[in-house]
Length: 200
Image (cartoon, rainbow, N blue to C red):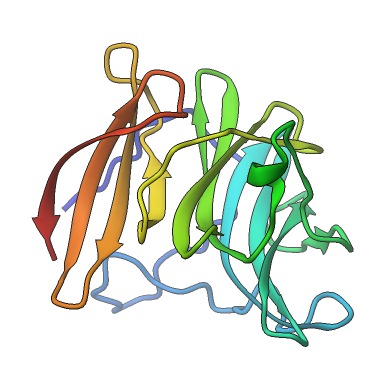
């Protein structure tokens, strides 16, 4: 079976050939972990990174947890995708709406490039888990979108292109009985309409 990546060429992406005799389609880098457990002071763990190519190197959004066990998002940068340095402070979102700026927790980031703009989605604490959305064009500032998401939704990821003129998002809606994969569409990534869900 041949695997094909559809997207721009990434000649500097770190790559290690499959070990001889390994039958898996995907395999782990032999020098894992690339990022250690405590890369920043008072951070007890780092998880679930979302790394994208950026100006010849790589930039990512990482979930961290501090001594209080509250998850935050940090920016990390790397020239080669293997050695990362991290901003010492969590990401601070810019937003004119004080209600949207309120912070409870943030975890499980995803980063998607759509029409030249990087959009970050994450599980956002707002009266329970919702999906937060922000955008950036320079990786130094994230502008939060005043978005109407759905309660108890999380793990939202944008498709890397628009369908017609609309953004499309796939998200996860856990319930006591099952988990449902939900598709939603939006013209401006703010107000979302939901399609049919699929039980998982």
